[in-house]
Length: 205
Image (spheres, rainbow, N blue to C red):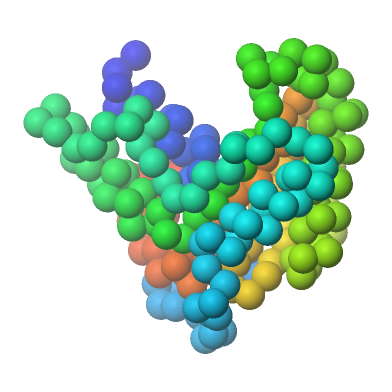
């Protein structure tokens, strides 16, 4: 597999996957290339968002240290002589969006087989995380959704907002495997994405 494909797949599947969702959040359509009119509080920044998420995760009894502020290249490398133009654009976009994102992923099968073997428990713990976030001022936007995902699996999503940030929570289960995750993005930052940048994130560019 070419490094371009691996880089793009991993980057998109992580933080950027949630970011793409956030581009259209609250507006019901494609975001414009200009910032929204709403004022973003400078006192509630990336570290404050991460603090809320870390505290809610601790309340749920989940392991600490799995939140991340910013967007990193999947292999830790920067652009070099062998980097394609598309890779350079992805790396540059990731660097620009880093101050505007916070992400979290629960333990997967390789980290905790016992936890992964009980999708109901991981789903319950995500509910506890969301309850903790609500107690810290995060307000759910619209109803949560849980739909079948084949082979007895389910896919759950919920969206929360607080002071210019949008949090997309999700839970996937398939057989005995399950995983919870959340991606938080700053609304004003992602509203400035161009059509070309959105296409690049979704793989159409």
